[in-house]
Image (cartoon, rainbow, N blue to C red; front, side, top):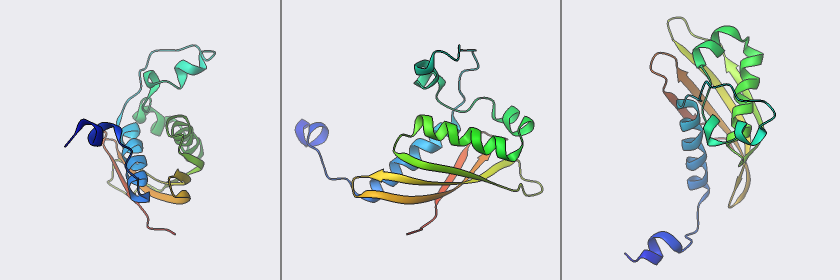
Amino acid sequence: MSFWRTFVQIAPTTRRDDIEDIKYHLTRLFDSEASLMSIDDRLTEVQRSNYRFGIEDVHLLSASLDHQQLALKLENYIRHFEPRLSQVMVELVERKAGENTIAFNIVAKAKTAQGEKELIFDSKISLSDMTTDMKEDLYE
């Protein structure tokens, strides 16, 4: 395999590649914990940088915010760190007894190489081990 074919030559991407990449990126976002250092709100570029990538304290967020506020917070994280998605909406799902998770659905439009597609991800953040499980609903 040549350097050119491996790193330089642009290979056509498929819709599936684009969606898998978005799903991977969102999973990493929700698996990561953002720095807890206070940053001046006037430093908007720093607020949107990799320095702030991830969720602030998920336990604190889930305990102190009601469902609507938590959904809005998750929507803002997605809007800031996944620019390929637009019209993002997060719907929280009621917690099941005995489950230590935050369950939610992400509904958004994705800009892919084949055009704009509507996506729905069923998502869960486990509060015990801070892992994220995300599945795409096959919706067309």
